[in-house]
Structure formats: C-alpha cells, structure tokens
Length: 302
Image (tube, rainbow, N blue to C red):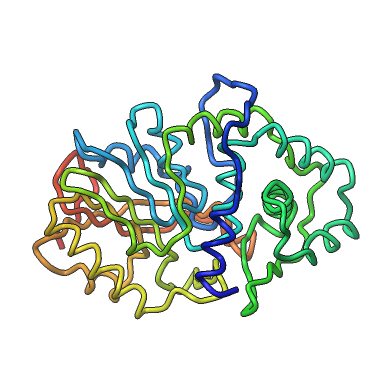
C-alpha cells in the first residue's frame, strides 16, 4: 500500500466521542513486541532527564516506556510506520469496549484452522476489525513475533499455546485511559517536531548482531542507511535543544554512528523476551545513547 494511501486510511479511523468503560489499574503494553522494554524499564526510567516537556516515542512498538511514565506526562506523541499497529493504538484509545467484544469472539473461535483464516485477511476496512485481528494474531502467533513479507502481509506461523491471553480486558481499558494523553500518528520517525526541552525516546529496529538480526516490522527492512538517517536526525534534534534517548544493539557500527561529543553511551543488560528461537531468550548487552547526563551506573567510559 502506498504511504500516502496508508496515511489516508489511518486518518479515516473514526473513533471520536465513543464512551468507554473506565479502569484504574496501571497500564502496560497490550501487544508483545520484539525488543520490548519491559525487562529494562527501571533502567530506562532511572536515566530519564529530571525534567522535560512533551514526550515523543516515534518507534511505538509496545510503548513500554510511555505506559510506565504516562501518569507523569502532560502530553505525548506516539507514532510508528506500521499502519495496522497505529490503527490498533487508535482503537484501544477510543473504542476499547468494541475491541474487547471482537477479541472475545476471536478467543472463542481460536484454533489452528481459525488462526490461518484470520491471518489471510489483509487490509480490513473496519478499524475495530483491524485492531482485533492485530492483537489476536500477536497473542497466538509463534513467540509473539511480528513479521511481514515484501507485500506487507503478516506471515508468522501459529504458536503453541494451551491458553493464549487473547483478551486482557483490564489492561486494554487501562491502556485506553493512558492513551488519552497521547496524540497518535502514522508516520516515519523523522517527521516528528519536538521543541527544545521535549524528550524523544528512539527504540528503532536494532542493528543486526550474532544473536539477533530481525528488522522487518514493516514491508521494508530497517537498513544501515536508515540507521545513519536516524543518527543524523537525532543529532539535529540535539542541536535544537531536544532531550534524546536512544536504544540499539551494542555493535561497532552503532558505536561509530554515535561516536562524538554530543552523546553519552551506556550499556544495559536486557532480557530477550521475544526471539525467533525460544532457547535464545537470554540477557544481552544493549547500547543506550543520550545527549544529557544523569543517574547512570552503566556509563561507558571506554
């Protein structure tokens, strides 16, 4: 689907003025996501600036950091270049009850045959149907992996789950409340427009390592050219007075991209919660890049 057409499709998601059940519990990511940050969330929170303005997360994924700090935010901007993901966020925000009903229907019908029937449905016209399909497949596919082919079609096989958690009603309602503070956009990472004093957290598809090489969250891989483009954009934001924090693989290539005086480099230990091989779920070292100082026991001095 052409990008302009996809933007138009996202803009047609009509979720205004829909009343929803209120939930008071703390929100957490409502989808599994490769490289999700729940396992290192405390390390990230401890490295945030003491004060900042508005919050931007342009590689949304599961948005673990947003949900963790949402109570303390005045305004947030959550975006991604994955259209179905952003439609799902929009529906969770403004139509959670309708979404829950659709997910309950998926849960009742769940089987191997039903999974592949739902997987074969692409470009659904209804936003709630799109969101319910996205979450259902995410909760029942192999290892919670999101992967698409060159046509943009989800192609992950079914996982082996005795009782998949398809309908987490309480968390969807909590996420809906948290997202009331967020403006949602379908766009590329370099289209955000933060102001001086705002905070941007970049959590892009990681540079390949010996243990992880998956970068295909959309129909286009996130290449080294894209990594370079991201580094250039991050430096531009730094020069504008924007707080920047960025996660990536600890590889020589990434270190070289951020090898200048603008950046402080830290190493954090992160459990791999989603991996193409279950036995590959081990702690790995990740690089955290920031343009400010702070509480940082993992500061890299080498």
